[in-house]
Image (cartoon, rainbow, N blue to C red; front, side, top):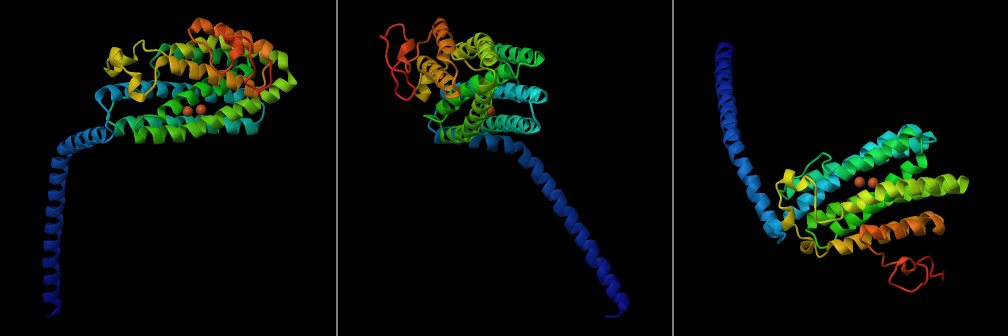
Length: 318
Ligand SMILES: [Fe+2]
Ligand SMILES: [Fe+2]
């Protein structure tokens, strides 16, 4: 073969190669378009099979849509709270730690939204229920008056305590995906509560009166809002999700409203004890919560239907 023949052969081969690549590209484009139409159907089928695999019915997934969406709202509020709190933190280490907390809350939003997608139920990734907006407003008021103790009490203690109760609940008697995500988030929330407890303890030692005043201020504003969300009614979230609120059944995760409210109250009392608030201040606060329609089971001192008994703290009698 002479050099000229070689060039012709080369050009011929290139022409074939271009044609092959063009055809391959065209075929792949066509396949992609065809597959695009069937991808949704395939995802739908996958989601249905997951629902079947978990042995859960529509009622269960409606409940999850409601709980997970409302939880995402709480996580969004946490991102905003932590972010707003950074400028009033006392030192750089605390600012960095708080930014990290905000970052972890933003990951929780992504994890929960992704969970809803995987299990094929709708989730809202914005704050819907008014209680979250009310708590957010109280937090902002505390920031405006540079009341760091109130900020920490609202976000690190009160909200994180409720988050822990919620994620513990989502870790029991739910599907395996939900339980796994709840477990991962729970470990972060426990850490957040620990950070808050440490911070408030240090502030209590320096200025107990101011910190107790902040607790009383925050309690009466935030706890009624948090507890009002542990109910079978919702303001507008159910309508936005197109789920039937009346049909939502907590029995599908082996719990009920009464148990959740008692668990939440007990957890709140444990948090107050953990930090070391004065019982003379906390007892009237807890007692005032009977107006929320719940009686604590852990601390019999505060039950109106029980004789005085021992404290939950280290078994010491009161
Ligand atoms: Fe979170
Ligand atoms: Fe948190």
